Length: 176
Image 1 (cartoon, rainbow, N blue to C red):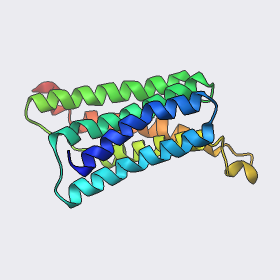
Image 2 (image 1 turned 45 degrees about the vertical axis):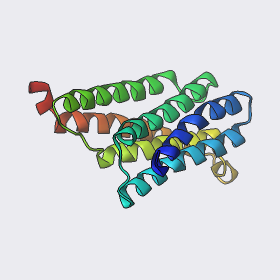
Image 3 (image 1 turned 30 degrees about the vertical axis):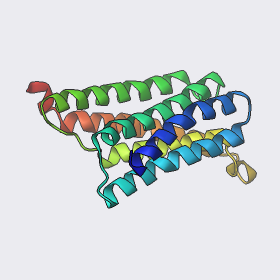
């Protein structure tokens, strides 16, 4: 197993550690674990492309690991009353829809590459989770504006936008 795939698996292994830590009430430690897991996402992709270490395993597991990390975190935050359940449902619906679209396309030999809006969606989701885990720190030191909530709303908007963009750009798959 190459280094990018090991980093992807590390991200998956960190998910239950993150969940247990967060649900035990150690949100700052959980945040550190979440940040490390999130950084492995950027790092594994960079290494895989730079050193031509892209594998079929990585193509499947990397986005799955991202989805598992984000959905696990958001599910815990719903349980803790920090995220509205409908926001999680919107994010889950988009992920199921686009993953299904990719699976149908793959069956026809078509690869749907990640769009910039999808990458921005993931970044916003991860940032929102970090700010929520930090309970709006450090922003709460100098403003009453809920930056964590603003970034969460931006993530939900980008989730919807990127989902629509994927569907519109790949509508030919539905008619094939």
